[in-house]
Length: 267
Image (cartoon, rainbow, N blue to C red; front, side, top):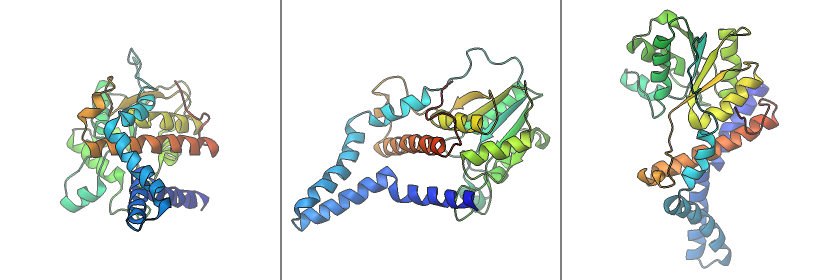
C-alpha cells in the first residue's frame, strides 16, 4: 500500500512540476498579468521565458546530461563470461503496439537491440527483461508483453528470456528482477539501460542487493563537443534537459528513501 502511494505521488508531482510544463505555466501567467499591467507579472514571465531562452541559446541541455552519461562506461575489455543480462523497460511503446498490432519501439530502442546482441555473444547467459505498466492508469499491455514479441521477432528463442511484468519504476525493476534472476555470488551480470539513466539504476540495483553488477550503458544522447547539442531540434533539447533534471531528482529521492546507498552513484 505504501509503495502504491509513493508511486502515485511521484507521478502526480512530476506531472505538475516538470520543468517545461512549469516554465510554460509561469510564462503564461506572467504574460496575462503584464497584459493587465500587473507589476508582479514580470517575474513569472521572466522565469518562464528564461528557461526556454536558456535551452535555445546555450548548451544547457548537454551540460545537464553530460555528468549522467559520462558517469558509467562499459568495461574497456568485455567480460570473458557473462551469466546474465538485465534489460530495463522504457524502450517499448505499449499503446502503439496495442493500437496497431505491431511491436513498437521508441528512442531507447538500443536497450532491446543490445540485449539481443549480448544474448548471441554470450549463449549461456540468461536475459531478464523487467517492465510492467509505468502509467498510474494502467495500460492494455505491459512492457514485458511487448518485449516478448520484439525479442521473438529479432530471433531470440522464448526460452532465453525471463520476463518480469509488474515493475512500475526503477526500484521495482531492481527488486522484482532480482527475485526472478536469483543471482548467485560470483556471477557476472550486465545491466542495460540508457546512459543518462545508468547512475540512478546502478544505485538502486546495488541497494536491492545485486552487488557488483556491471553497467552496460546504451542510448547516448550527447556528443563530446559543447556544440553537439545544437544539432538537435529545440523540442528535443527541451526534452533532454527535462529528462536530465528528472534523473537528478530521482537519484536524490531514492537516496533519501534509503533505496540507493549514494546520492550520485559512481563506478
